[in-house]
Each structure stands twice: as C-alpha cells, then as structure tokens.
Length: 393
Image (spheres, rainbow, N blue to C red):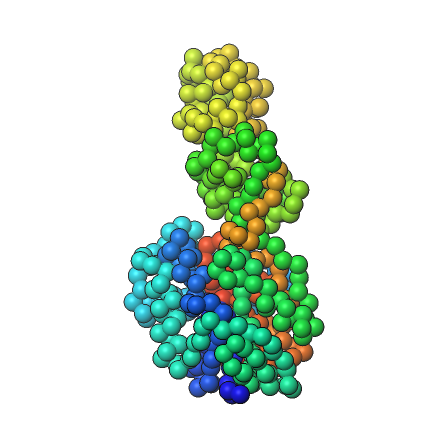
C-alpha cells in the first residue's frame, strides 16, 4: 500500500489548486482522476478561452443554503491573488464584459499554469484511475482502493465536481462519499443552463432562432441585465443562464426587450414629432423585424402613429417590456455549466474545508453547495476553496 500525505480525488480546478498549495508545504501530494486528461472542464470553459475569474467577486454572487460559508475562502484567496498568478506565468488576458476575465489565447494556458505549478511543487497526478472503495481507518488515516493500487492517506480531499456536463466525466461520486460519512447532501439541479419551451411557444418562437437581444430577464427572485438568445430549442444567452439558477419548475420569467427606454413614453413622443410614421418602422429601429412580427399583431404594427391610441401604445409596451413566458424546463446537466446544491456546508469548516466530524476529510469546489454566477465566479470558488484547504491538509 502506497503512503501519501495528501490524496486528492479530482484533477479539476479546485483539486489542482489544493495540490499546489499542499505541495508548497512540502506535503507528499497525489492527485487521482478517472479521466484521461487533467482539467477537462477548464479546457472547454469560456468557449475555449477560460473565463478564469471576475474583477467583481462578491459573496452575493453565490447561491448556497449557507450563504455566509463562501466568505472566508473568497476573502483570503481573492481574484487579485489568482490574477497575480496568471501574470506570473505571462498569460495574456482581457476583460470581456462585466468584469469577466478571459485568456487572450486558449484555456490551455490556465491548465498549463496549474500543471507547471504542480510540477514545481512535486505534485504527482495519475489519470485513468477508478476509485473502488474508500474508508476511514481512524482520524487522519484513510484507505483508498483503486484500479491502480491501494493508498493510505493522512488527508483525503474530495474535489470531484458536480453533475454538469456528463460527457466530461461528471458523476455523483463526491455526493456518495459525503453520504458514506453521514454528511447531508442538498438536492441537486442544473444551473447556468438554457431553457426549453412549451410546444406552442417553441412553434411560435422557432423562427427567431439566432437572434440575440440586450434585455433584462427577471423572475420573482432576481433579475439580470445581459444578452439573451432565441435558439431552435428554447432560450439561452447570459441573462437566461443567470436567471436559470434562480428558477424553479413552473415559474414564469419576464423579459424586457428594451431595457434602456420607456417604450410607452417613447411612442407618445414620436407620435407628436412624426404622426404619419408606421409603428412597425419605429419599432424596427429598436428591435429586429422578426421579433416585432412574431410578438405583435399586424393590425397594430401597420397602423400610423396618428391612428393609434395610447391604449395600444400601452399594449405594445407591455408586450415588449414585460414579455412573459413559462419555460417547459431546462436542458439539464447535459449543457449546464454548474450544479446547484451538493454537500451541506454546515458540515464543513469554512476556514479549512475540513469535515467537522471527520478529521482529515475535505470537500472543495463544485461538489459543495456553493454555486456562482456566470462570469468567472465558479472558477474563483474553485481557486479559493482549493487554496483554503491547501493551507491545512
């Protein structure tokens, strides 16, 4: 049986970060993963450019049953700390929008950074390894049986991620480990995920596929001002992905297609200035033609402003600025960027990421019940939680 100081299960963002920090403390660190490549989700993230953090990290950007849990790690290892690491490795990056930071080149730059730091700190990574059994012998002593041998570890770190994107190897492994040790796991669901539509809405809106619009998308819990996108399956785009994390089945969402103006007042003003203009031509200056034709009846849009009542203006404004739709569901884990829910943070030390009742057992990253917004927040949670555990394992 091979003896290891720190055994980390999962070679993703959080696991590699923890390994680096533990390695800096001269701990003997081994990272195991069932995949054939480390950091697969890092490679495909951000459209291949890895949205690795955000300038505006704040605990308010995270969803958890224990909303204060993430504060400690996020304030001790910040976005500025990770940015310094990126600069140290001379990786060019840029801000895309709303503080979101992307690599100028490829996501592989971030993975290479992590692997280089692992190598520098004598961290060993073994891939294509399946965990068959793990057990606690006593405090700070764990036995792990795998397809590539058996291991004895003083610290066991679960960094196995959530259920999102199963084609990347996502599995419920981490939740099963938690349950094995009597730790509560909150129900999970797909987050940051596109919506599917009811059949009648899909038929009606199908012609709008490919159209993106700057909008405010809201429900009774939250609202987001970003682009949203009509797709051939339903609704997507940043605003939709954001609101999906706050959406429950059966709820409606409200979309303001013209968030920067008061459409009712705008139509009243234009009516005074250009009474003979056709409503369709006025709206076409603000929104794509296909959207107007799909959402509004012809008997209104082809009237002159002079022939249109203020009541009709209100109806037009209501349709365009309170476009209400009830999604049929989401596309699920297949395309979800994150998993909402997971290992109960009440069972974990927010300082060390150690299980309070099981000394030597740690959970980090997405497997925990901490889910960030779109825009680099989930990567920052991986860096921060991995770093925090790495100081103590």
